[in-house]
Image (tube, rainbow, N blue to C red):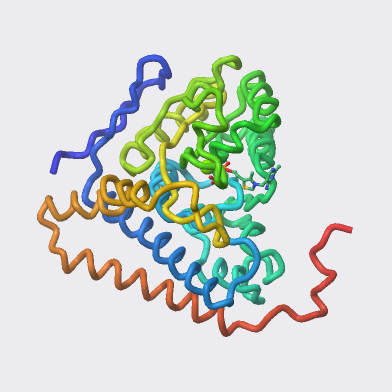
Length: 340
Ligand SMILES: Cc1ncc(C[n+]2csc(CCOP(=O)(O)OP(=O)(O)O)c2C)c(N)n1
Ligand SMILES: [Mg+2]
């Protein structure tokens, strides 16, 4: 395996840096594998619990997109903030939020992050700097820009990682946010998770400009397209974008080219695409398989990788167990923690 590249100690330059796929050390590969597996197994379990009726309401799974949050998280430092939409379980786990608390929120139990009163789309963690969890498409983009404004105002060097989808990228408030972010040089990385669909509508049917890295051109915001299925490419691009923001150069756009294997939500039979299309992506570019294959090629024993999977499954099973046995919220909590 090639020696890890040292981070270049030079000023980031959006015009000349090409976001090459930096090699990972074995340690980084293993961390990426474990973190992506945690999200995959968690989401599989959430899907099962939903099928059993233990989870109700909306539930949007992140399966297939794991390399995006895991790669970006590897480039962040404590103090940086994350905000996203409703497909948010992976983002929460990547920030280090407790799988038990996330799963218990899905099942509406007391030990959930919102005491069982919020559900899938309404979870937050001040400790892990996770700001939700937003059901209104695009709403998190202006909020994420506000987080960046606060960082600028307070004079700290934290960066806001603001995630949204290809569909959300067509929302008006996104461009109002872009304008202010560049005008005031706010430290925000806009991460557009282009998973090719917005509910049942393909990007090709909904977007006039399908190169989302160019969506900031009229505001002078640099951007680039990233292979969002390769965790190394994600990490390298995030390193560059975050360095840009921390250096006070303003916002940066990363279009993560990714794919969701499941339907839009648990109630979507996904009839707008073929089974073959999904299978092809899974077969050719699954983010977890890519890391596994590289580790196996580097002579890592398969047993070691199986052990990691078993450990992750244990964590997820414990979370599911907790989420099914923890009591429901006390009815006396009905009117607490709400805006009146
Ligand atoms: C303002 C608003 N309009 C419409 C909806 C309904 N809606 C929920 S998700 C969604 C699609 C968004 O797709 P995308 O941004 O690509 O994210 P993805 O689901 O693919 O992660 C729509 C239209 C909504 N929740 N909010
Ligand atoms: Mg989408």
